[in-house]
Image 1 (spheres, rainbow, N blue to C red):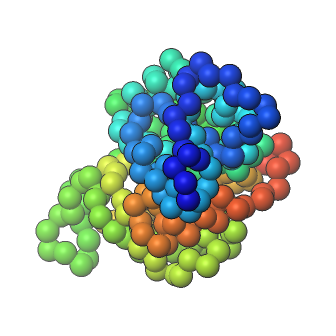
Image 2: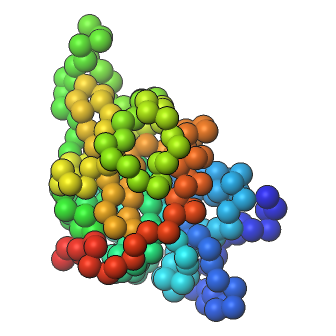
Image 3: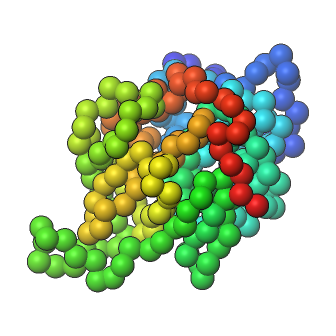
Length: 240
């Protein structure tokens, strides 16, 4: 697992077509890129951190991580000319959104007074209600949700093959997506039940941080790196 596999590609770099990028980690100034890269390094998966649209287009698969707020994230994506690129590649190649990168795949976020997001998946992102209560605690739950939660996969999929039911993943978030029911692939509960993951065509997304979730998270990332989805272009409808 040599470190030579991993580098940050300049935004205006012109990738050599003879040196195909295996995995592009999208750089839009939204944090946790190094954690994702290190997790891939541990798995021996070649990857680059890049904001270059052509590098993202040429990659075999795309990782779209993120922490922070939806408004700033969308501004950064627009400034870097990445909005249309992400809408394009999410239709035709393996693509995973993580945490904020999962949330802004949807049409709208209630964060920052309301933000129009990528619209790759139908649905909206909402804040945990407050006070947030659990039958297991006499006190209101804290928001943001920070900690470990068991996950329940609601349908089979190669990306979570071999991950035991109830495996715990690490979360840090105050908002969560409400996808169309047919797209929900995983659920968990923090005061309210919510969609811990969504999947459609070559696209998957998770609210948790698999790169910080120990062996279950590494297994999920390994499965993603080996996944060969059906790439019919009509599978993911891009919303204006």
